[in-house]
Length: 106
Image: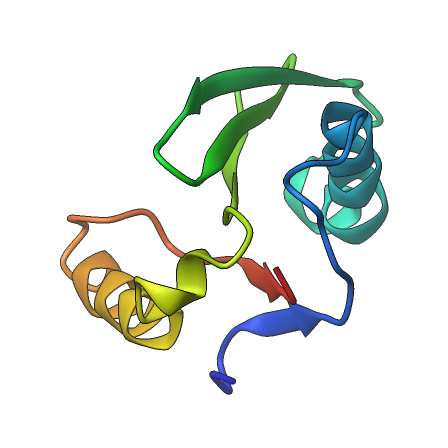
């Protein structure tokens, strides 16, 4: 995909009943060791339901946080996700958009 961004070969289903706990486990296992200095616990909060996406804020008691964006099923038929990621990378260089830490199959 993009050489400077780590990619996890896992799938998220936005219709999954316990998607919140799946996201929390994913962040704990994939990102926590590089993201949080101490062994603090993580909190997850569902931000909103978009037209097709689900957004979660995951943060620690250290006030460090990330956003996890899960695309809706078949939303790639409407939106070019590769172009979206390229634009986000470009905007992040100017601190207009958050940096992308990791992508996954969704």
